[in-house]
Length: 464
View 1 (cartoon, rainbow, N blue to C red):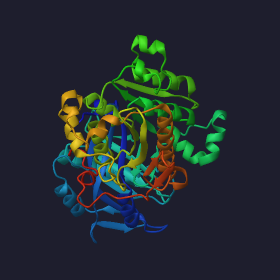
View 2: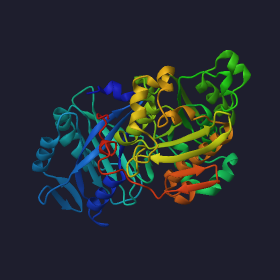
View 3: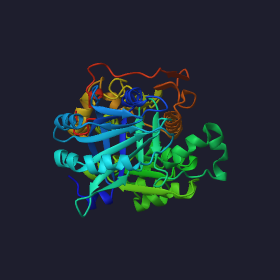
């Protein structure tokens, strides 16, 4: 169990799926005069600066498990059943409804129930803090952790946000810890398209970009200009001469100085951002490192702008296991032995709970992942013997105009995810064929029944 001092240094969050949210709405919504409650189990997801309780399943009350008298109280028998079901590695959450909209504070009775009746018992059984959540009449969630203080009394620490992930990313922000940022005069055209409410959500999200090459560098610039205020940048590469024709912001001086790609993007963002304030978190390293992974786990949304199979596999797993939507794209260019372009295609999709994963979309192949994990894709002798089925791995060449298109559609996918509006981001995965110049769009798809990634949903300690 993390001690209170460690928790004090962490931002706290709660996340669960859209399906679980619908189940909660059906149970907790008892009309305008009656509150209700339920318990749930959760697992921790810890990044570099954020600790998230990921709700996994509800332990709904039976007929005599709570007392309904306008307000609501749980019985001792109900609590004993929940404690028995909480196996090692799982925490316990109490979820209740309130009869008002927006971020909900706590009544005296709420505090007594969580702090005095539950916090010590739950921590003693699970070695994890009690998590409390309250749902407003408009579906807005508030949340808190109960941490053991210097004395025996438990102390409440509010979360910064509660995230519901599915076809739409719905985020409830703590108005004290994450107040809305007013749009600026430089964002008038941007806000006019998707409105102040969506802009307010966008400006408070923590967004990560994995890979700051041809696509990622453009995504970074786009996020900066539309008002994102917290951006994590992850890449281990430095600028080389071959990067100049496809990395936004890179200069010959960066080639000479071997400037890290994350530093180039950081420089560009600082020069172009339109938000009231900007917080850029560059990490010069790989996602495959524990430190790189921990920085990714701090984010609300991730952009996959890498061209290697194993990092994409990791991001695919994060999308489901840690409930962090991942927006991914890829470009495939094929030329003949004489350098003549045969075809160029690219694809853009968002993966996560309620959506098909990269494998089910055909955007990732586990054979490629295995080759990358074994280091075979860095072995030129092995590469030459891959054969026609896997040779396209080596021909994912890219040029700046192709990257512009992919990056633009990835950012539109982000706004569609936030707004829940397919008229912004499209109806689902998109495929563009340069010849004859056609964009295909699929309706949002689901993973196959036996998909291993889909089985990871909320299972933070499981990997494929």
